[in-house]
Length: 95
Image (cartoon, rainbow, N blue to C red; front, top):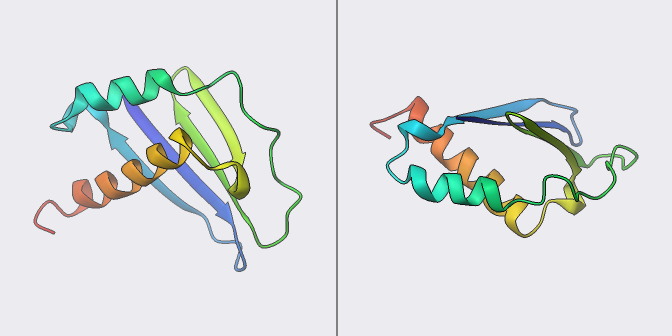
């Protein structure tokens, strides 16, 4: 299972993405539990209309959500932070 987080927007309008392969993680059971606990069908409206704010597209087949920066809280924030941290380790296993 793969989770991809794409962050766009912000002051400079940059695009950054992080991808994690859950099966490659030592705590893959915790990852699966977190993903299955997310409210995929109950997300706030997309926050595209806020200048200089980030927008997050979170994908984990068959799910995908788009959240404005202000809506990225609770379990969504936990997931994005974990993906970002784990993706950095996958890119630099010695780091």
